[in-house]
Image 1: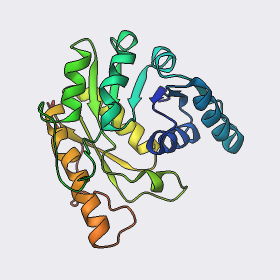
Image 2: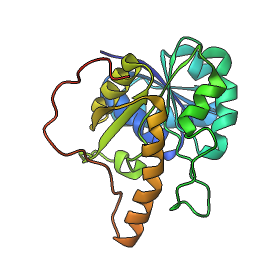
Image 3: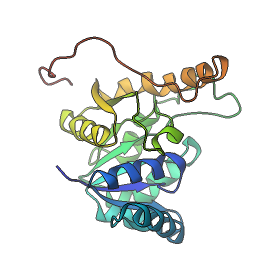
Image 4: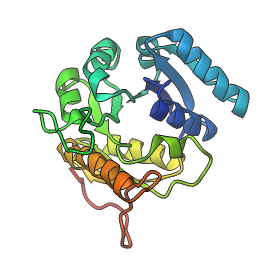
Length: 224
């Protein structure tokens, strides 16, 4: 299935890398930015390389025209970005990639009062929006290449259907998407990012990721 995906904050490292991979996979991608001109420039770079039809718009415009909205901004910008797009995302799936890193101690887990950045997003957007969370544990600079990504993506949401959409998008970007359970479980992946940053430093790893071992069967039951 092909989706219409708006990548809010799509000129950043993670947003640009995901936009490129999804465009290459055939999805209809709109890059959003606080400045539409920056989004247009990022879209033109992808189109020149891949021959695709990625569009660039403001964050609000991008979120308005797409079916799936992916938030790829730093934790410090999360609340403002969500407030900006809130008027146009009712009834849509918003995939939040936010990791609550608080400089300078980014190797220390510092989850927000709500329990996770994704739960914070759900509280800000309200019940009319289906929030999912994913792409916390993959290195953006690795995604920006054409290399295979040896990393699993855990998808969290109170909606199994929303998690399934995330899994399809993860697979399209060259990774393996897996159900991670309810949105509250996103705290585990958000916290793990700080652990991975620590591992990258102490073991000199170029982008450590997450891989679930074992032989996995098809998901069973509602998986709420």
